Length: 147
Image (cartoon, rainbow, N blue to C red; front, side, top):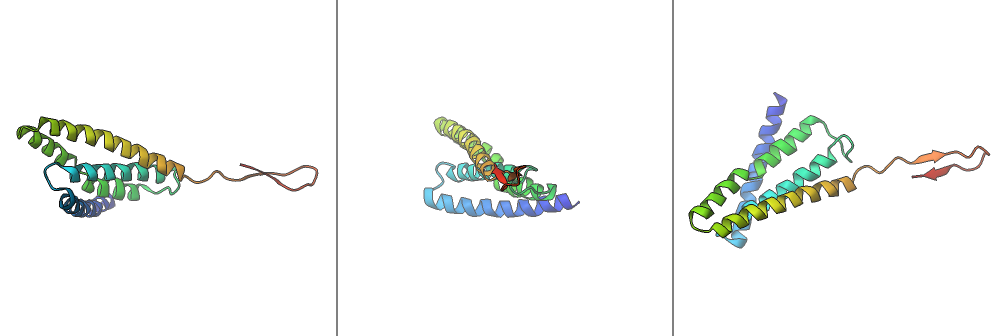
């Protein structure tokens, strides 16, 4: 039951963030092309990639399944907009902008895959540093450090 509550709260927060970002991006760039949806999906992809790596068992900040549900399923699920992306792509095509529809598909897929990779790679770079291994000299000397 707790999992459902975590996903519900995360989804609400992600949905509110998506709405706010949509207002900001369409205010800047207009709504002739779904830039807000592309940007939201790219940011959400970066966040899920980074969080997945950081919160994994071997990540810098390993977390339990509740935190992963809250962020990855809840927040990212409420924030990212694949259904909006799909509808906007069909609408562009229906209104004769097939090049725009293809650009939406191509840019969304390429940029989101890149964002997941960048988020994951950045988070892997932040993983916990290896433990310092100390060997002692049998002759009674000072310890030798090896990384």
